[in-house]
Image (tube, rainbow, N blue to C red; front, side, top):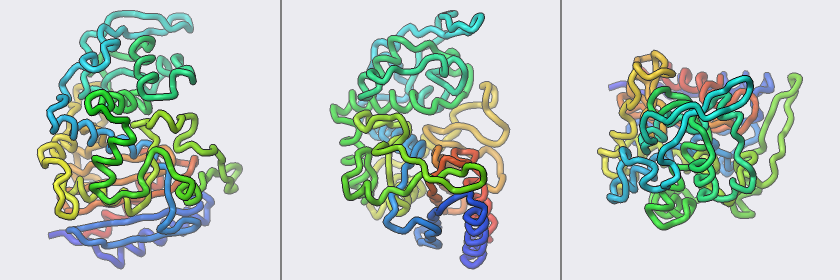
Length: 372
């Protein structure tokens, strides 16, 4: 049985964070590690405390994926359902092509978008490429999930036919999934997440719409400009340029270290938190199973997509089968079923964020090199 060496873990994290703060790479951060149901480590550094609330960015996506799986458990949908079953405008989508600097409709998609494609970033819907960049969503169509999804259905050309390529859909894919949850449940997405996930998991500070008291606890958004620390101000937005009224399932939750650790513990415990079975274990198994084979373009040698999560295919710092995700402002978490541990790291910074952030890789290294 592999166990974490607490002294080694603390030394690793303390040393790394001190260097990052000294180099103005972060203003502060927090970290928490659980193993075998016990809290092994909890630390707060720099300008954050246990009361700090963080903009979670794309760490919203696993919450949205779980919402889809809850609706599947309720019999309201299946991940292999066509998206057009819920939003008819997504039937008969076309793939775009850039010709002489202009985006044109090139050919019909070879198949319909399925919910599975959205969950695994293989839908071709506003993926991270030039075709997506040439199709900005007008602000008047970005106010609600309904208006956003309907605009995408009617107007957006796909980058690829579904399941031709795995390419990250930073916003659209999971906002459309959130709209599907609204349709199948009859609830607004913020209400759905609050009642079906946050309340059962004791996550009182996880929300799409912070209260006045919660806004006062939001961690400042750090940036590094010409080697110096600066604070970026985006007003009362949980994610830049995303209205609070949209409840964006891609990026718009805020949370605390302890709140999100409850979510991570539930995933580690196959849907169970504090004796409450939030979702049946087979759905957590479905989430963490690799769903995109190497034959699909865009899948690298070491990792692939589960449902809303990155899944490790080969032992690295992280063990094969580890799953989790990150956020644009530097949030990061992973769940390691083999070593029965989960770990959450939170910062809020424009500098060096996202899934490839140095701080995310350092955190993985610092935790896993302490496993004995």
